Image (cartoon, rainbow, N blue to C red; front, side, top):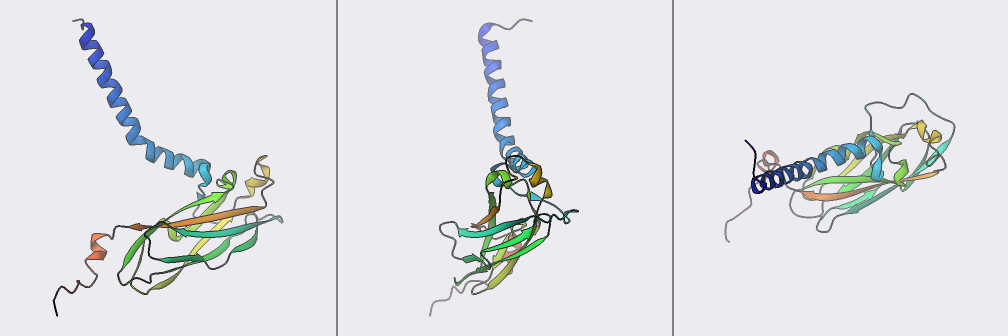
Length: 191
């Protein structure tokens, strides 16, 4: 059975709409995966253990902190920079403080500059891997454990990098139901 031209056009249009919808749905997870694998856009790598090789060459790592508009926390690196040997595990701390009178949940996004070094900056453990909840008046120190992959010295574009900047931005996140249920109920009585 042959389709007439109007039916064929309608089927093709439906096919295009389904294809475009599928691509839009897959774009965010695919882009996230691509950035993590390649370091594109300054996205650091993630590892479960330290590098097997430590070079005599050093690199300076700078630390930066910011907050999205509306995030009530104070957030800062506890050290502005450190020098580590390439491949050596570094440990840095950030401090967050919630001066508000209510619990606030936050999630950190991060990037590395210069962007070409992102694939070589590898985090072993980081507060950014999970949501953080700070109670009113709570102050915490949050660690990040990292190393710079020795393969950076063999990359023609990144081998001349002497300083890497690790930047975090904290964003307000909706409180998970199970944690919100543990918070004291708001006092609704009228005096």
